[in-house]
Picture 1 (cartoon, rainbow, N blue to C red):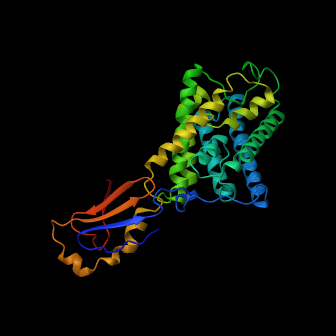
Picture 2 (spheres, one colour):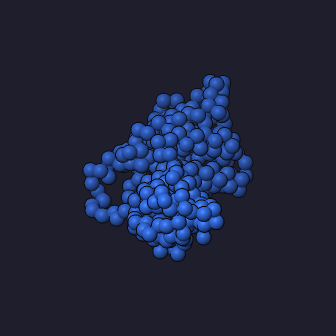
Picture 3 (cartoon, rainbow, N blue to C red):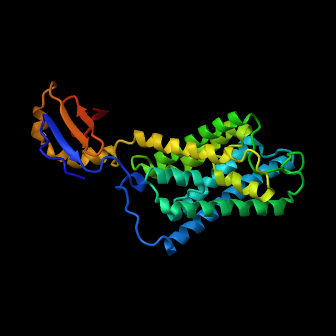
Length: 324
């Protein structure tokens, strides 16, 4: 990050070298991924993804089975809470190990926006699908779900299927996954957000998505979530919908947030460390008609962000910012 220099009570200009963020967490440049793919660290990440996905699928789908088997005591809001709370808990438990994707669409979207190395995506997807498949196997054994599952007339099917037209379900899956990935990108990859609340925000988004899309499409938002049960019971009807739509939705959500991301530094980090370069005397002498401007230039994308206050950068560094 270049230093801000020559700040006076009139117009000032500074050039920043790393405006657009490309690093994980939104506070570092795009990382250079090197070294062997198969390492102890990578294996730990795969185990984390497997455990997180298994726990999520088993807990969420168990709530569905219990609700359908025992007179609907859980209800739709209860099922949504189980999914959201499980994801929240797993994010705080495993997020520091693997990033807590638990979803092939999320891994692909992160890779497409350079927040995750492409060469690790196949391993992550394999761990996620394996976790989902084994969770579905455990559910089948525990609840003895064997008869007429695919016909929806016998035992409960814990997979996802459209209850409306495939077009409607496709759109709902797209919107739900877009919302999820947009929130993930905002709270988990941008330093300006409150990172400690990322798990809560993501879990709450899942709850909301299930409440409005669950009765229509099943609210998968996750190809692994749908693929695991489909493989165990052999129910492949409309499975394509739950693979394609979430991936498109996640890519759109990640790219949309990237368009809103102006800098990989928080606004206070850009302004406050350099406020002392404006002397107290200059602040006192600044007239009401003068405008103090801090121009932040992104040399790669040729974007300028004008930051100014009505008179000068004051003692509290209160300024406003707009796209030039």
